[in-house]
Length: 366
Image (cartoon, rainbow, N blue to C red):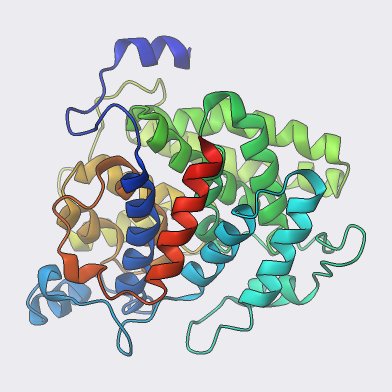
């Protein structure tokens, strides 16, 4: 069904025919920029209050994301950990141990970055040098967004449609290193998948359906084959896919064709209410299912307009840095840095590492 939908839909006129090295760099850089800017208001409940604060600063065009006032959060530190592990080119069991090593190392760089409790606990249980040391005990409370916020770059490493099973396997295992509840690690699958879809130039209206109908079944089969915490994972599986099917129906995207159905009013206050309805506990973007959901919602609504994207994904009440780090990575892969104020990313913390990892992932994927 999805392939038929693809044939009927045209690509955006704003997208070049393929993702170049510049798009890879933009994806990594803008993910960091979205994180740093969203992190400023991560614990603010009110979207309207955030919009007023941005206005008081002179607008997005006047935000220079640099230290000391605009550090990246744990999201970018661990996204870099994922990217730099993947950039080693290792495969199979070796890449899983490499990911675990980089996560343990990344957790030493968390001062002032507000890592989540589940991430702290999970990473502390990793034993990268031991056999199966990338596995931790099943945690039924690990449905947060800690996997979703750090796995976009898996899509940069495995961007081709024929690499779906590898992308899913690596995303599942990377996510389960801290978040082994399916609501948590399937969020990691979503972020990696959406980045790959952006590189493939797949119409955005089909992304959610691709997640539910293509990637999630592959993930479920992989979990059974891998043989780790199968019964507990099966028991807890349904919430993620049920919520995503609910979202697709709400937006008129159950068939992947649209048109997108939006609320009649959808300003900052209405988006706060809407995002909270997506969420597990009334804090939009804090869980594995709704962080990529809000990211996709923003990408659908903003098109190629960076300011509209940030209005929707970084300046909302809730876990705004985690929603922004996902959406801004995908946006950069689609549109590059065209129309983005240079000050938003030119002095970004860890800019060199973000650019270098993008270059290595591009080389490995081509």
